[in-house]
Length: 470
Image (cartoon, rainbow, N blue to C red; front, side):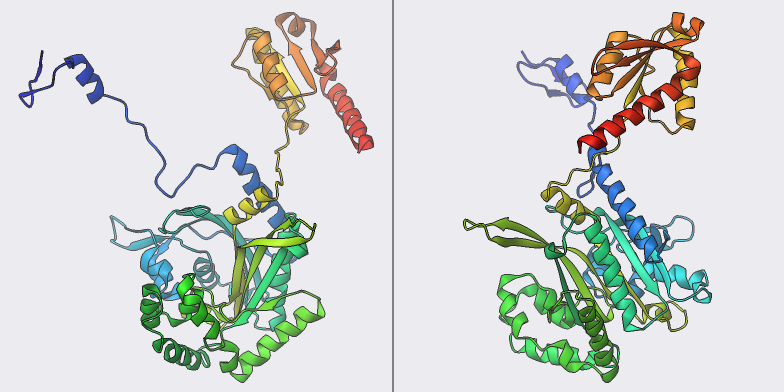
């Protein structure tokens, strides 16, 4: 038997009822996150918090202060600063047009351009130089989503603006290295690669030599490199395509084309690194992908290690976790006076991936005390007890929406708390509260006025006992 849809006057089909069709029509839509974006769940948020916490500790020691530019900037800021022919600007930016003024804006694809703009706009050139800043937050690139890469991801950024001495390059490298080590990465697990790409005076000669070399192999390189040869020749050295690797190795070396000033600058950077026994490797293919870079460029890689059959530690693979360099012309491009600068950016998701590979568990502090309340009177009193614990900075877990003693104690068990405070109507009237040791099951009745001091005493005893066992 067939039914007919009154709107379309078409047969619905045998075996189907109007009721089923209408159900399908009004089925609730399930919303999902946008492709390339993701939810950062509590289990991962602890890693982000940990990385920021370590960054604050290390970077504050080196004199860097936190500053956050806005997520939205004028598109021109990136086309002018990052470079119109870079892949970030050409293919990977999220842009929008404002309704009122018709301005074209962009979600920041990186931090440095916004920091440089803020430096000029806020008159930071009048401060003690160099101005040292760090930032932590989301950036956006419309690149192809793949393992470990997202369209919204987090960067940790470090900038030192207003000083051109090569020692500042080394200070930024040292701060970056100290931060990576603070996350649990050993010096032996870090690789620093470094190069110099010269300045506006000597780089044109190098690019000319690079073009000449690659023009001889035009039909042998990948199609992307063929395009880069016309628009952004330095990016030829950043190609990951297997067929282009032999040509990268034989390409001209930027150090051979440095002007005297750039050569002296890079020489001093390496001398200072040597004097500090900081290991590094010269990498002729290291250029970085943004137009504002000048002179020193560098990257840090984390090494994944394993033991072979003989028990000898071998390197399995490396993962780039940080990259940076000098950008001596950017402040001037944005209308400021000539202020040399150097910075580095860390891929936060990359760092989290490394921490997880090394099985470093970051666990957020858990409350050791759970407050159980039974009945309306106890529920209201529990709120005031909660505030007392907050003022004393003692973490206190609770579930005020539940009234069942059993359900609340089950929650306390799941949280592995050491103590439960049990409050009923009788206890409120008597001014007392039950303290239960969740490990032994022993209970005692204590005055409400003494609950803070008693809990502090027991927590101190637990800490002392835990410390002595270690």
